[in-house]
Length: 289
Image 1: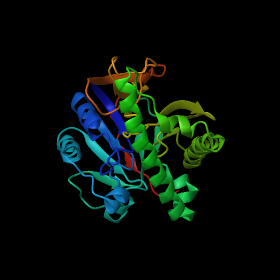
Image 2 (image 1 turned 135 degrees about the horizontal axis):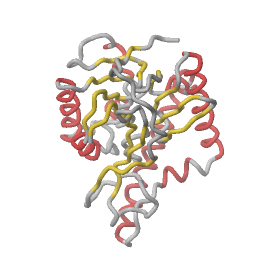
Image 3 (image 1 turned 90 degrees about the vertical axis):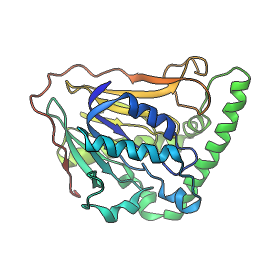
Image 4 (image 1 turned 30 degrees about the horizontal axis):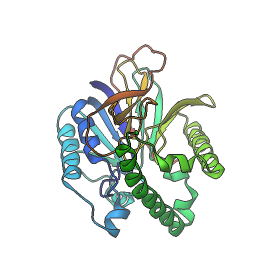
């Protein structure tokens, strides 16, 4: 499939729960004019703690660099887990542009702010220790999630995300997601753009909020989702999910490592078709607002 633009975030290469193999399969199935890496592509925190870099992670990086050398314009917007790249901003990295945020102009002339989203997370700025403790706890939940779903498969059941269930049983977690989405839209409004594209909270979403477009491209740890722009300027969420044998029967779902096929399925249908603009977008780097 060929798209005008693709956004992926939160791959966490270097973490043992990164679905680098699924991402590689996804990248082999798609082509695009613009590819945005929306932060936390490399997990510097985990790499400092314990090395989990594998051959699939190497191949993902090589695949992205090869795309950049061809017709794809790659823009890397660093997040909190790969903030070590901040010092390389403005330097040539195999032709990949590195920045904190950028502006994408759609085919129908909307201007969208693109950034990871950690800029709104108070823990990032005020309590690094607490943030890292939360990250470690999330990793432990994913460890349990992996063994739990192996047992479910042996009993003939499909994948079920323990971490997603836990996150949305807690009122504080739901409140945080709501506040995050509203905060991102306020940031976009203050920047004078038509919407925002982000990652960070590992929750794929696409909707109108307070008159602006809010897009979250999800993650490649559980959801395995990507946001795409079609050639007419409409948007769609895709999930690289389990096959029907291992699926949960609830439509597009997270990708669980193991035997079986996988494929691209739209998680959310395209928006109402808008008339495409005549010229391709030229993403511009956005300064600090």
